[in-house]
Image 1 (cartoon, helix red, strand yellow):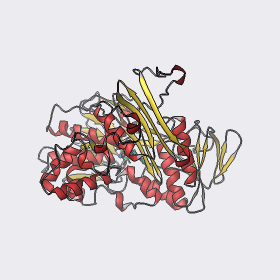
Image 2 (image 1 turned 30 degrees about the vertical axis):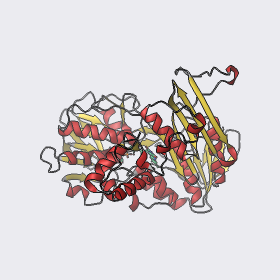
Image 3 (image 1 turned 180 degrees about the vertical axis):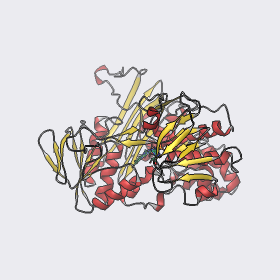
Image 4 (image 1 turned 135 degrees about the horizontal axis):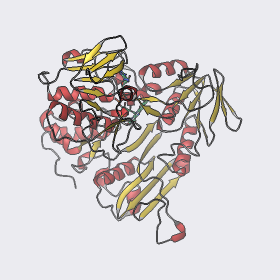
Amino acid sequence: MVIVGYGMAGARLAEQVRARDPEGGRVALTVVGAEPWPAYNRVLLSGVLAGTMTAADIALHDPAWARGNRVRLRLGARAVRLDRAARTVRLADGASIGYDALVLATGSRPWLPPVEGLADDRGEPAEGVATLRDLDDCLRIVDQARPGVPVAVLGGGVLGVETALGLARRGAGVTLIHPADHLMERHLDRTAGMILAALCRAAGVRAVTGRAAVRYYPGEGVKLEDGAFVPAAVTVVTAGVRPETGLAADAGLAVDAGIVVDDRLRTADPLIHAIGDCARAGRAPQGLVQPAWEQAAVLADLLTGADGTARYRAGPVVTRLRAGDVDLTAFGETHLEADLTALGETHLESDSPRAEVLSYVDPARGTYAKLALADDRVIGAIVLGLPDAAATLTQLHDTGGPAPGDRPALLFGRALPQAVADDPARLPDSATVCRCNSVTKADLVRAARSVGGDLGALMGATRAATGCGDCLRTVRRLAERLEDDSGNTTEGTGT
Ligand SMILES: Cc1cc2nc3c(=O)[nH]c(=O)nc-3n(C[C@H](O)[C@H](O)[C@H](O)COP(=O)(O)OP(=O)(O)OC[C@H]3O[C@@H](n4cnc5c(N)ncnc54)[C@H](O)[C@@H]3O)c2cc1C
């Protein structure tokens, strides 16, 4: 088996294959990665950018991992061509590797918007322009965006907001430029976007929305469509990504917003698979680690023969942003509005079933909660600055259970006391604790029976809290409770 791409999906697949075939008796595994270092947690690059983590903190594998796991690892090796007839992958250094099964896990690459001067003749970022995709990018930006240096960040989606807040934390003078009317408009309604912009301003980021950048002047800055000029010694582009599909397309495989695969993660060539950001598996979300890791687990089952019936089905995804004082969660239907002209009869702007929309807004404190329900089920929410509400609503959305009738309590996260992160032992067994790794409370309780309640051991056994790290506090508290209970587990105490 050859895996092309040693990022979050490729590294996880290699681990999962070895977990099912530890001695390598069934699968001889080669991993080819274009980056020069062992796999690291890309999601946590934002922490390195903000100075809260180091490159060493985010390593997924140590340099000895491959040898210890019988994996032939080629670092700094870029695959440049697939020969499907000969079943070989050619590398940039001229080497050729044969395969019986090939997995493309090539991720995605940053997209440069059509702003004059932003790209050079080869379509690469011009001098003074940076994108943020890998550790190299991150270290370069950190080196350039020193305290006091004016920085423009182009694109106010999740990554742009995180980047702007991270660089402001380091003392750079950051202007965040976003062409849409408000920040993160795909995930947030206008009210949430405006409150987020205010939180950014409070953190030292100048947020400019509703105006697109039209021209980049190297080393000087960026001109906006209304003629305003934003001085910047460094311009970081966070305007979205495009799946890295070149190898597949050149080999004649179908590509449509990603390498097209079925629910076995298989292309039209039964020997070639694709997972992670580069793949398009039905309507599954792209650009997130959760589907990439779920796909790695399914493909490992199939390719090792551990479970020939495994199929990939996309689960619900939650958008989260934790940076400085910003604590934001959004999922599902976030753009619905209650129709106040038809009081007593709420009305939807989408084709969803009849919905109720409730909201609470406190702009001065930067808190906002908006909840959409249909048939008494949570179908969407935006929660800013109310972590208990975020936990409760996410849990209700995951389980699809009926929402408690006390709507104000629901909106403030007090309707389900067992959801409160302060006492995760009271979570229902089915509650998802770690989304990145799809780990439920029951998984953690079960693991504690064999490895005990030590946090590190629990994380090692379940992988909980090894993705974006958002759930670390919950996992830690649960571990403490499980350790206190010393074998007398809390399973079954949930509702
Ligand atoms: C700063 C940042 C923050 C993020 N935050 C979040 C977050 O909070 N939550 C979330 O869910 N997601 C987040 N993401 C997205 C997440 O990192 C990706 O969804 C995830 O990394 C996808 O994994 P992947 O393996 O498909 O791609 P990648 O991790 O990008 O790995 C692809 C690898 O393939 C290599 N490669 C490409 N082409 C070739 C080739 N031809 N030959 C050899 N190797 C090749 C690349 O160099 C790369 O190492 C973030 C991304 C970034 C950059």
